Image (cartoon, rainbow, N blue to C red; front, top):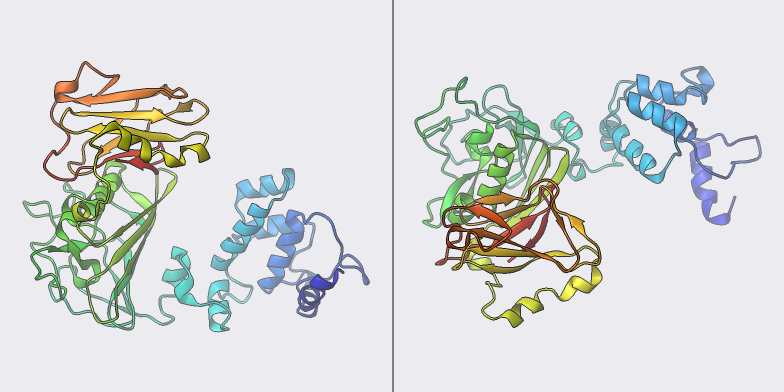
Amino acid sequence: MPEWANKYVGWAYQNGYTNGVSPTEFGKGNMYAKSYLTLMLRSLGYKDSEGDFSWDNAIAFSNQIGLVSSTEVNEYKTQSFLRDDVAKISYDILSVERKDGIKLATYLIDSGALDASKLSNIEIVVDNTFDGYTLIGVDGGDLSGYRQSNVVVDVGFGEREYWAFTNEHGQLVKVIADEIILQNDSTEQVTDQGRYYPDEAKVPGTESSTLDEGHIIADSLGGVANAYNITPQESTLNRYGDQAYMEKVIRDAGGCSDFTAIITYPDTTTQIPSHYSYTYTLMGNVINDEFDNVNPDDSVVVEEPVVDVVVETVSESVVSSENFIIISKLDKEAEYVIVTNNGTSPVNISGWRILSEKGLQDFYFPSGTVLGVGASFKVTSKGANGTGDFIMANGYIWNNDESDPAVLFDASGVEVDRR
């Protein structure tokens, strides 16, 4: 063995994870799927030396215990085994039960090898909720703003399972869900305002005139109104800003999966968050929304350019990207947006979207839309219609009195540029 590898291979050998290729050699060259899966199966307590499995059937046995899918079985048998396969298997194995019936993540947490608070996989967190958290039941319409410390509460309405976690200070720090299921007015009892409950919990801080009793998972997305799903949220942010936009995107898509909200605070005494981070899977795309708990109108640093020379300054990073698509101009008074390709090759922007962030109106570029090198498309509304390439709306779109950024998203929902 090379000297740097001695201690690693020695440890693996002493603990029964590897036997090498002979009594005197560890082996070198490419790692194959069944070889790596053999190491993983041994880490789960299975022993090929005792007939639990064999190196030859390691792939099939891994499928049998739920470590790899049927599709992956075929891939591992017919395609090259890559580093990303190693990463996926190493991640997936945390959710798999060992031979003794204990999930590997639980085993590693109990042994001190893993910190449960650092795990983000939903199955792992929910299954290990009871390591460090107490599961309690709270009525969905409980208006009390009090939160217990180190507890987990189901904040999904009806049969939904949305899990909310508090830290040792009673602050709501995480909300997760395998699947976000939209409110169903035809099967669920809702108020005339389209809500499950007539009011929200009074979390300390919501008395401020600038703060809303903001849902982490909105009632339109199946969330309840107790203190474990409510945080004091800046009013504009909650009604027209990033929070409202995120909820609209999920509603428009018919729901989402693998939802995780991480809520952070400026200190351990307040219940008013400073930052929100949302990660969720939407139509096969993993989306991450990050924003501070502030008025987005006040936090906008760069307003629309007054003269053309200012437009050029925002494109300073163009030289570093081959396909750099930007909003080169937004004229809110004249009601038009210009999107330009400053890259070095044409880009298919079919399904890309322009959003008016204030009013939440949007426009999708139609199928087959390709933006050539150095070319631009003008997207118009109201009075500018007939002067551009595409019509966003027949009415007024842009708010001339307040900040109303134009935001450009690619077809997978990733923000590309804003002005």
